[in-house]
Image (cartoon, rainbow, N blue to C red):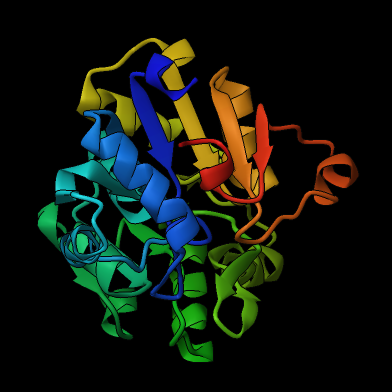
Length: 263
């Protein structure tokens, strides 16, 4: 089955890692595919990851990956802001990875009340485990004054070692509710924009040759299904077997982990 695919798109949280802890029953099969020369791109909605640091972590686990083999929702959001909106200054609600992508793109990243004084063209929001009331309020006020509202992803939940935590979508929802305004753009899964970025970077155009692996039915699997790609749900993260019928999202393959699929 797997050798028929030219590109494998794998999620990270819930598939490769749980808050930094490796999920070996998925890592070992993916390593076998890499050893056979298969192309794997790691596409994650977690905008907090630094692609440089994540590439080192994946490589240390046996998954040889360079920063160019990783696409975060932060990178996808920044590419959209740069390409479509011509943003020069952005107020950032997010972690190291998102800040790094904004700055690497040549944009000025703003963090404090100075943002309101200089009127950023956009507010970009991602997962932020150190978010504060003031930080969200400043972002809300900038958006109210005309800044574009860009969200890396609308994930409701995020899997940690201690259980589920609030995702970026939960944070974005505070602003959405407060000013009754939906985001101008959501860059991450299930929006296919993030996969368009991946396919641009790999040069692969035939979706029938793409396999999407993830742990969330409404995020990873819905995106793959909507694109027309084959999908694999692994139950090592958020969704379990019983969620398939409840949510009405059906993967091509449903496995406990990738050792059931890849030998």
